[in-house]
Length: 167
Image 1 (cartoon, rainbow, N blue to C red):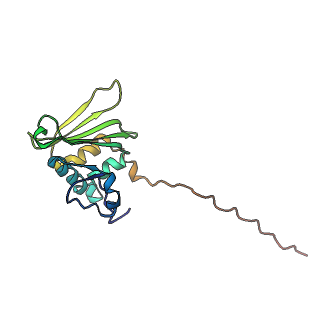
Image 2: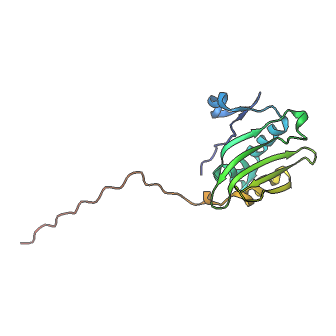
Image 3: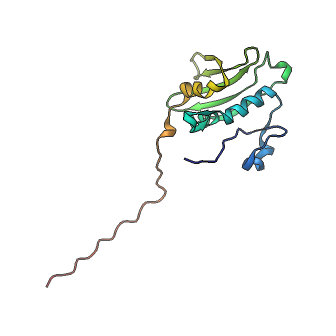
């Protein structure tokens, strides 16, 4: 387990400290919506799994790719919810996940779309401190808990030792 490392979304805004990722800041998505900023910050800080990881790590460990942000101007946040979309492909869930903010209820929601022909599923009324656990229930196959061994170079074969002759 790597300790002291933080996972950050590729998003930036004025005053956001990216730490070691600061050198990539120019390629990150600039976020304007304050509700989306709060959601990103909460997902990067809110601990799950007994403090072993943060909510953002649930997405990373589930194999999230193609991360995009929905960043409406603040006045449109009621009709167009701010949020983020990611593609997930693992043994538990394959499809699209949208985590959005419901401004009227002051809660989050999770939309799960599992590919063509599948009916979308929504998890409503998710409070900020429940978001990580709801994502774990929906998309986390727990593969991150299993050690993976990759052999990069085969070990040399032992040379047979010659036995001295008995005379």
